[in-house]
Length: 296
Image 1 (cartoon, helix red, strand yellow):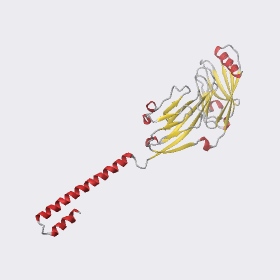
Image 2 (cartoon, helix red, strand yellow):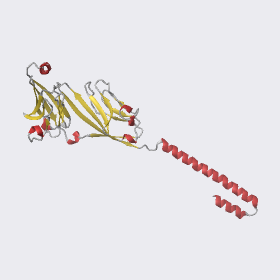
Image 3 (spheres, helix red, strand yellow):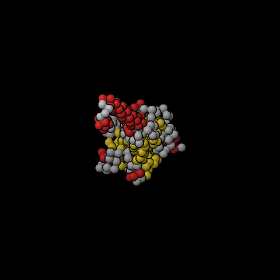
Image 4 (cartoon, helix red, strand yellow):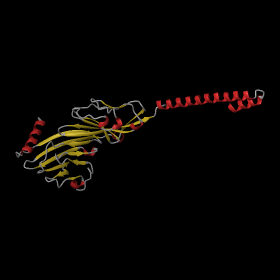
């Protein structure tokens, strides 16, 4: 019934029938996540969109987009949201980044036009420790082995999961699985060596090499008609060298063979010189002794 009522509010706003209404939606996030409060409408650049938190104005878009204010510009010196608010100029949706416990409360959206409209969003931010908020899972693997980065979540149809390696996009899963990119589509570094699990969003790197060392981030966007939640999982991957690579083993074998070959040539050469010396004067034994010492 509540969704139907909200639908009527949006329709009345778009059609400009002069009706007004109030809808209410609630969202719960973990501290450090980002949350977007969706208006569900497309502005016509003729409205004034104002956001309030605890009856204090925190953001505003004017009809001609010339008076867009966030943070302290709207809040008369209250720096609660400094550099943590973002407005969508097309829809008026508000994003609160890097949420804190103090962000919990009611957010009121007021749209002033030929048909005034109002919505209320209840946001609850659950506190976590600094260690949990900045947690980085560490993985260590030997070169040539595979490593699996599992976020420990279940992928829902409306979610978007995007993997980054050192802030470079390497893989993505959308709800309809139509935009999955791996290998050369994202980065040739991982050609034919990435594998995605569409159910969990986990990423497997096959046949790891030293160049795979670094920070991997998974951005998860959970979408809803009224809100979107963005959370990030981090993995630090270390790739250690194998005991002896196949190339190193091959190199050692070649060196050993060359040493034996050189030794064999030396023995043949020495024997020939000894034989020649004996033919010249078989009675002089000290010459033979000198040749044997020389070739040893």
